[in-house]
Length: 233
Image (cartoon, rainbow, N blue to C red; front, top):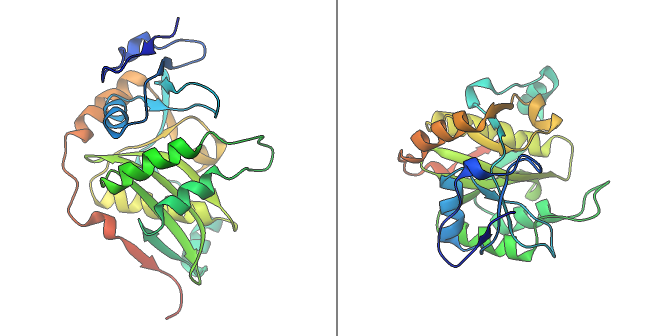
């Protein structure tokens, strides 16, 4: 049986998460900022489809990127050097979320419903959720968003409207977070796309130990004002 969350602001121990489906911990509750922050601080995240109850997860293995292990192919390095683009942070958070929520080829729907958008936009207003955005000639063409607690970043979703746009945002995010002392980025679930960028699986206990250390640290002031331009003036 999956525990059903009450109004009490609490989660079951992550050690009680199901083996199948891997990591399902609880259902119900709400997407209040307080509950989201509590969940992320304990290595728990929401993931559910519209029409389902809110489902909370803590998989036995976690896909993470240690920024020092970021992998950049020769072709991506060439794009980073020569392609005209601009990277901005937190200038179009809701737009990034809506773009991530848009239907994709081969997928019948999205897990980022209106309630999720509103909940994370509220986290953004509190300074806890952030977007890294790729722009070309003033047009938003790709990006990603996630949650930051202390010096821990939890990546949520990314999108591209032109080739490599999300990868450009991902690389700049990883490098910037590393400079700011963020030693681990949560990528949640395995994908070949993330693996190609250097992310790998680690066991839950290792993830939680590192998470506990990083969440307790303070992030540098002003770090979310990051900008970069590779476009001609």
